[in-house]
Length: 151
Length: 159
Image (tube, rainbow over all chains, first blue to last red; front, side, top):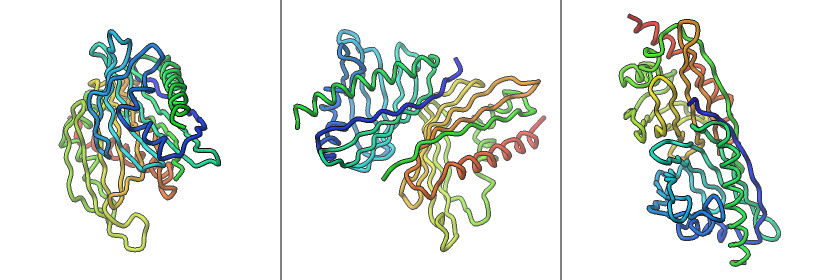
């Protein structure tokens, strides 16, 4: 199938300093708490190498069958301002999508503003765009709950 | 630091068969001919390597001797091939760095299709720019020149 290409942008305000949000965004144990694509899914980090050029591996999906495998390559890590990485998602031996993801963090009077940009190339049609946006939105909802616990 | 997100698409209808156009990406000697061995004045190649496999890498390092210009120094291109479907599409991510400072990251999608007895090549780059000195127009122009050179290479290597 010919890849479908798109981009979406999400912004959230968090009552947490940037350095503490950075930890929630990049620490493997923290990511496993919020990063799954829905409340019913899990995210299991199998390997992490948080440095520019480093690669992470994680699985996600239903608890009894986390069948989606994701390889992350960290391209740019400017703590606590910006992170940029690619994610390549496979399931059942087929490639689902690749994306270039950018996190941006800026100070606000009460904490920080967080932005995420996802530039996507999908191998399963243009519907993946809304699926990925829903997944990231769900993840950020759990991240917001985690921030409330931390604040 | 506020990164700029942008994208551009270049489409070329090329008078060569899909297999030949594909070979220009897959065959190391052909790839080198259009991608590497056409340096502009002042650019000199330090090193280049290509492993065109899913998950494989391509790395090039060039030195630009242009004292006083913002592009003076050592340029590095690091590519990872994320998906390769022969004669159909290539998706890859790459970064560009100047003097070890990464100034852009990109996701590139290259499509190959039949068109009027030749090949339609569609190149889309989704880019994140970290340094305002490097606008997307520079990148678009750079790729336009590279695709010109690719077409020249195809003409020179036609059988």
